[in-house]
Image (cartoon, rainbow, N blue to C red):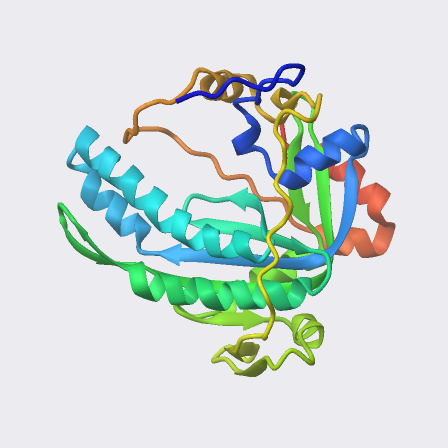
Length: 288
């Protein structure tokens, strides 16, 4: 059912669900700005088990694609509902991994509490029965607090790029974390001091969250999708933008060729030459 927009307001942009709140606010308030430093806590959560599940269900064709879509929706809806309850913003989606951002008061404590509860949810829903047999999903989570560098750059379209020491640190924490663990950086340990949180040592030598912070839920204010005149089309390449604006499409398994591009050296460049140099270099990267 579609609800008509109130008289005098804009109809919601169909692209809005695919654009991070961070980017919507950024384009609304600072449309020409290419770099933004945010004081907050980043959470990198990676779910394992989906690759094997995709391979199993691919042999079922369209039916398998629909089943895979339903499983993805169910799992991430349950996980993200916990994250949103504590004020998370979804920054990046990587198939079976998500990068979340917590800002504002007690961002470190809220991020850790949400991560702990997300692991509890995964333990409850991670054992899944499918048409191709049972599958066990698990999740590893890394957390880091501090200055986080974001870049909104590109020629054909504007891509949100997350890099710099903060991004590297949260990725390192997730890499150390084992299935079922929440591993936090020393900066996050400092951020949650006084909240009854406790940490131990993980197998990788980092700090393992063993008792979650005692902090109340604090959902982020909802965004009225009709309140802004931001052109969200600038956040997508043309084929993807047109695809999303065309409306709902069926789930499918498609044979494609994928190219993954990685650029390195951002941390060193930021230290040696500053943020303007990193912004310029990122602008020239293959971001559209």
